[in-house]
Image (cartoon, rainbow over all chains, first blue to last red; front, top):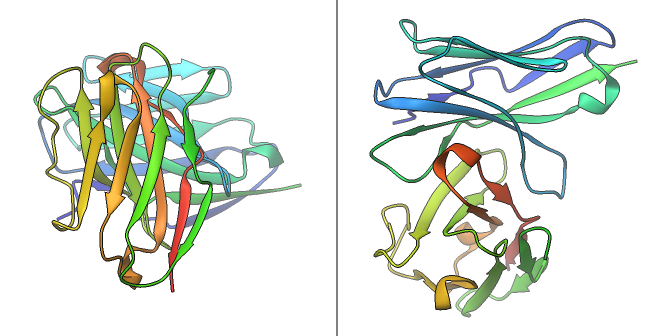
Length: 112
Length: 113
């Protein structure tokens, strides 16, 4: 039973446009959410996070939105750049557990 | 070192053999995690060490898998009697606290032939 779901395995966007990556979760105990970016043959790297007391967190071109009632979060990248092409993982944790639960990832391709 | 170091980066082994994968976390990080990523799949949690507490082994897929963390630092993941379905990238991560995220190593690509 997947607790963190990324229903789009891939997304293609034109350079300069907005990329929106979506993530849904089922566990209402999750209170901390993160996005990781992964290039081939490398480990995932931390991108941005949000705690459940917020509904938005922004860092440069990256913004994460959290809708707790819908158990949904999204990552917006504006403007998208070819170097953003990677696999993006959504992850979540609950205060009662120590580990992060990851989604299956969305492969983003930004075309010049 | 500055990051999480994993060795070897690649390992090819014959079915039925045992393998050991090593992780050197960031110095001072009290938490250490093992995940694996099979082809086309997300990151699957395996085991979690936090300080001197008993590890959370709830993600280990079978009793062929075990892990140790010596002296609160280096960790070794051991897979006994490897099977083809064990082929995956094994990722180690460390953290200094829940709100600080994880830092991942580059992983060990294990291929069982």
